[in-house]
Figure 1 (cartoon, one colour):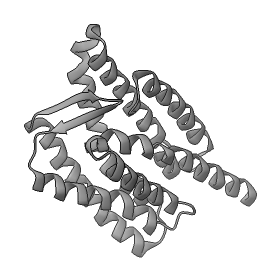
Figure 2 (figure 1 turned 120 degrees about the vertical axis):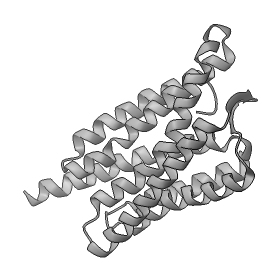
Figure 3 (figure 1 turned 180 degrees about the vertical axis):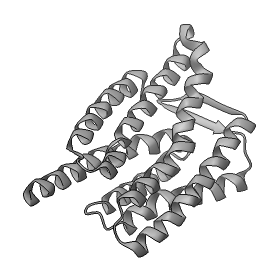
Figure 4 (figure 1 turned 90 degrees about the vertical axis):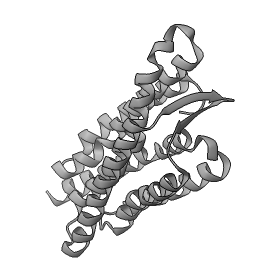
Length: 218
């Protein structure tokens, strides 16, 4: 999170709680894949809490590299796959499922490329004001192309999905990205991940609605 170690650890606990409730509410195995996303957000915020400590507390300085790379692994490698995979698994419409399968394959390719860039290029994190700024020493053209593909693979699947309320996930991703890009461009990796945690509440809502519909059919 973009404010402090306390805020990050607090968000991590809250997201873990939402994840627990989501998994309990998710009855179908395919829904549980979606329900686990808040836990991933939780681990990401937990790792950024350690990034904050390593950058602001001298005694934790040795934790900077592992916690920074763990956070970036979630942000750069995990998220391109998570949304597309969960939407693909949940889709019942055959034609849409074919499109979502293609997007999922693209997201796997993107994640592989971004994982390689994390390994090959130098990454760094620093606190500027009340935000953590992450930098990866890649070219501007590489960043532009991967950013566009990243956004498309995350945003398109929820809008294609026939799952009720799933479009809210795509909507929140778009709005949060625009806000982060316009007002916090230098800290977009951290800020967008913070805003995107709202998705966890939407996932809980979806799982609750699906659970309610399942009970009514029984």
